[in-house]
Image (cartoon, rainbow, N blue to C red; front, side, top):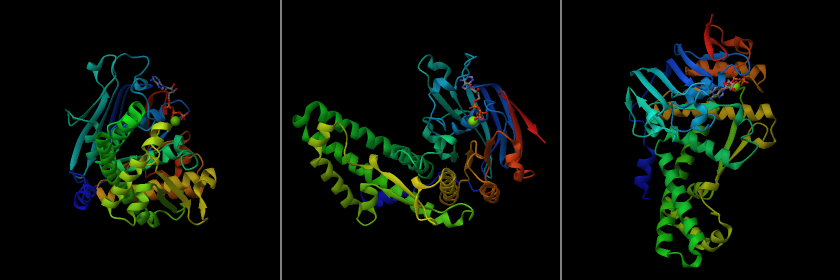
Length: 395
Ligand SMILES: Nc1ncnc2c1ncn2[C@@H]1O[C@H](COP(=O)(O)OP(=O)(O)OP(=O)(O)O)[C@@H](O)[C@H]1O
Ligand SMILES: [Mg+2]
């Protein structure tokens, strides 16, 4: 890929500039998880959801998380979203408000899809061709309890996090990752099936596709990371500043080497590892192996050695930096979902988080079992009590 094309790809910004807070002003759910029917009307301020275990707080946030492409914050199978007591297809609809106006976004089970569960999405009543189009209208970030171990465990989860953050930042990223993975799987299949007899021309073509996609993927990840690092000092000082580094063949080389040479070196690497990859049945090098290294800067300590609360604080710091990056780069104010947020945060950090959210002016959705966790947000947020799949506004 030439430099200009790469630059153009990276400077791809939202076709619809959003400059004012994006907020859900109405949310309706039908036959979604433990909700048979629900409607909430709200304003652009933060939303607190509180209620007992099993009342439906996470389900509600999950419903919102399905308004962007992907499988939502629980990565659930579509079939699990369907209310088990109702055969009528599940649906989530939201009225979203920003400076440009009001937009209706909806998603749900395609009633035509029968047993082959399929999800459809609509913007202003019109079906969208693919879910990816939703990302042009809404940006969203979330922090869930499932992410608590992300800085300590598994490279894959951290790489997926970086890629997910990059999608909202640069909507072409998903396509590049898909192209790369498809070519990688195809190369591996050829090597496994045909071994030394595999068609070299075909392998060259696949490795070429992988190399071009890799450079674009790595450049987009690098760009996101450098933006996160730029705004990290702006977040509330109660949160530890996170040192971030991408550990990956393409990402690291791109820091010092022109894109075309990085492409060449990747092609060379794959050409020389064909036999090994055929034997092991895996692709030994590439952007699918990249990891994100996170450090607690003030303590000069790798994140995996930090305490549970410090890891949560580092993760939130990354997300707070990300929210700022989205606003600056895409002129799009994101929604921010924080499920079960009170766990692991001490009083100082909880207060700092609320202060940061309020000063950012974003619509954050926060959940916890007890309204008292959120008392610092009295008068600044709207409180809803969740009881067994029903919601009431709390004054
Ligand atoms: N497909 C479904 N149909 C009906 N009910 C479901 C479905 N999926 C999950 N549930 C139920 O939804 C309920 C609420 O779950 P949810 O995870 O939203 O609770 P929560 O309020 O976040 O609780 P906690 O405080 O424990 O995190 C659970 O009791 C669960 O059994
Ligand atoms: Mg929950």
